Amino acid sequence: MSASPTNASPKRRAPTRRLMAPAVLFLLIWMIVPLAMTLYYSLQDYNLMMPDMRGFAGFLSYELLFTDPVFWDALLNTLLLVATCLLITVVAGLALALLFNRTFVGRGIARTLAISPFFVMPVVTGLIWKYMLLDPVYGLFSWVMRSMGFEPIEWLSSYPLLSVVMMISWEWTPFALLILLTGLQSLPEDQLEAVRLDGANRWQEFRHIVLPHLGQVLYVVVMLESIFFLTSFAEIYATTSGGPGTATTNLPYYIYLGAFYQYDIGLSSAAAIGAVVLANICAIFLIRFVAGNLNAGSQR
Image (cartoon, rainbow, N blue to C red; front, side, top):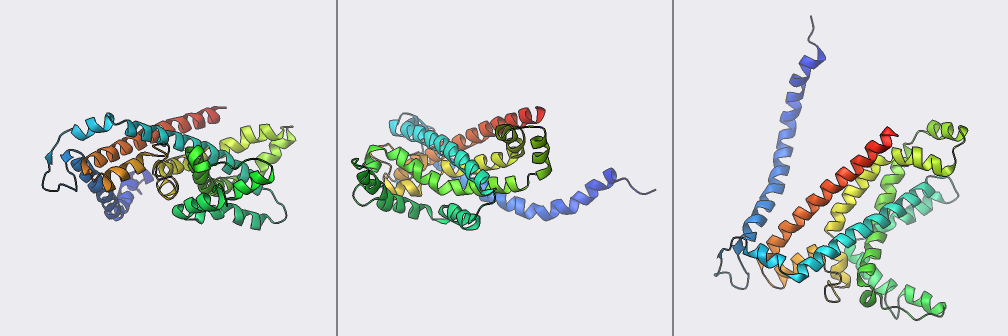
């Protein structure tokens, strides 16, 4: 009598696990070693300007971190940046995906132009927006406002965080567009035809068929974009340098200032641990939020 698939499955999985073990071990070392070193330095009194004066400091760096008002400004700016960019990119990417999922003349060229910002490097994105779009004298926005009879706006000094949000959203909306468009193209056409025959309008079709179908895709978009938004640095470095004051200083830029301007490795490492904790909190919250919505949608 031949063995059942249930009894044979552990034996079949064993070679697969052995093949995966080196890759998993490499990934663990790749992640754990830097994290362990960061945790170690966060407990040390270590300043690069005084390399001989170093020793164990305990949680002193964390106490200094939590009493630093700049850190709390950076934390608030990070949360605002992530939440605003997520909202803009997901909504705009979904709207563009619905548009490009239809057939019209020049769709291929329009798709290429729509996804092109995603292939621009972050530093180049910052420089394009700083000098070609937001410059109060030579920028495109200023020319449009003067043409309409309005005074140009000093975007980077008057609305610095909004300017950074526009740059990052312009850069990452194509990513949401690509992923969501792929999800829309996998939607069975017979489902749409069935609800149309039942008399559903466009909104009901989108709410009850399209949106539940894109649930897993939206989850991927939100998770990946959240990770990248939490680590946004180049756009801020190339445009506002965290200013004016601390208006655009987020956690990555705060860590950069502590490490390369104050040379305080202990404080910067403590801030980096804080950023890791924040990223995990955001990930847990997003996983539960999206999973809850998916379960509610499946029950309906």
